[in-house]
Image 1 (cartoon, helix red, strand yellow):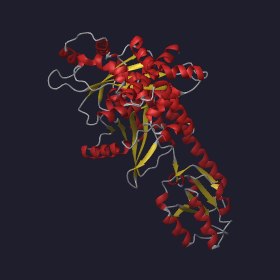
Image 2 (cartoon, rainbow, N blue to C red):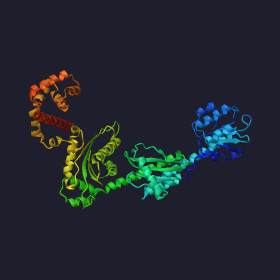
Image 3 (cartoon, rainbow, N blue to C red):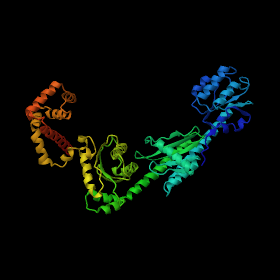
Image 4 (cartoon, rainbow, N blue to C red):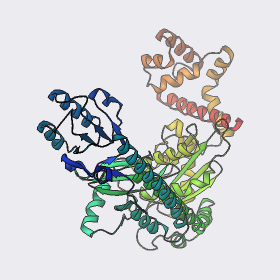
Length: 548
């Protein structure tokens, strides 16, 4: 398979019709690819150029006038034409030195015909040659895509695909997985490979690319990386690309790269799902942990592939819940459990060995730290952001996502307790404004108090006068008291949050004092009122979710 489908200026002037032609300036630009051939006699018509044209001219539009000929040549260069072929004769008997100097400065090939030639014959010949090469390139690309399909079904598919890719583009190619070893075809000296890997790591770590288009990254003036991300379910698996030296990217390279990306994505996704199937034993063990079945600590660590001696690693229990509504006319939604492999890859990259179970509309995670993480809270926040982004991308932007995260644990036999903490954090995440169990404060107690009769009786004893007044008069005394206490008894701030005048707030506070007694702001009364208000909010939301 040949990638030599472009027709350069150098190849064009080797055609039979150019046998009496001579390159008089700009010879360093002869490697420029020709996209089309066009006859153009004046600078005014240069606006119709798209770039990449080889221009034919007799000099009719500018003749011997210095300003006109330099303006004409300058406009061709500005419009990114690739060369100018001029027929010497009546209008311009020779190429002036000023045109030669400009062409040499911009490495813009300037070619002259010493004998008359029919421009129509040149355009026909070169256009036929261009189209023939492009058609051959399309046939080659189709054959390349078929070969990738065959390779993707074989063992050792990734190395073979990279070898096929390198053969197609005839330049250095690479595969860079953010959490694995980079591969180069053909192999590079270790020092060069190390330098490139460090450069890629620094470049790719600036931000995970979510756009699937190819990107060009200059290394030097003459060398550049052209790469494209391999994405699956909104998750970055790796980067694949090529290194160009004194060569520009073109449509052929980009199409070949895109076909390679598709084949590698299929191989990587299939590998991930096969690995998921191989984790059946670990999943069953996770079920035992969830059910609090008694299993010796050493046996659990052994079955989970953790070191049986030494200090056990820290782990965190995490719950992810989602509620989704299918978009209008959308019936083929991704099954949630299909995200397990992608989630596992994301969490592994963040430093966790993840045990995952999907039941209904929630995922349960046991995140074991591979190595001690200095700032585990920040790392868990990054994990939540990534999982939420993938869920929204795959299940729809309208999906509602919630998280709950337990305290850190070491004994796997306590995993059931930590999952219960994650459950509690998930239940109170909106009230506590944090998904972490450690931030729940008072809500850590409310979760364990029986709703009926203890909690409801407590609410009744402290808030019933206000609830009765609101029901009878349609007032908002309960909401007013909640905001007033939340703002630390700041009348101005409370009035602003309630969107009422301060005089209205004074009137409501007087009514609250009538219902509860003048001592309702005393420390012991205020503490009980705040607990009752929080409990009331929680029970109302619980009742609403049960009704829905």
